[in-house]
Length: 137
Image (tube, rainbow, N blue to C red):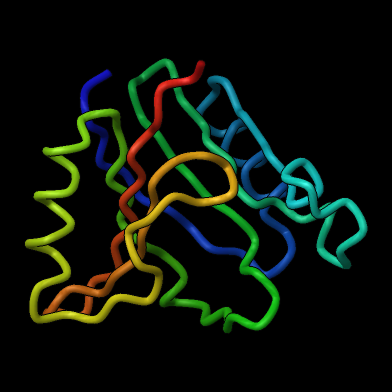
């Protein structure tokens, strides 16, 4: 799979409804994972969306999630640019360049879902998410 660049939207508890709305608008296949799906079944946010991805027939990809507890939701600033794929060296290179001179909010490291993931804001104030998919096996 080639690396992918797409918007990543943040919601204040209504990610499921929003992503289903975008699926109605654009068509396509919607995959939703809740926090409960990743071992947090007893958490207050277990039914909230940890990650959603809509892939449309037109080739659009839109990702989104509910803001985790303890993080602020700021309408108007509730987006990031997502870079994802399987090419570890390529994506780490992008991460190094994007985070240089910026700020890192989540270090690029292995996460509970098994992928390597990080979040940073570049020197121009644009928030980025980098996800390196790990081979399943």
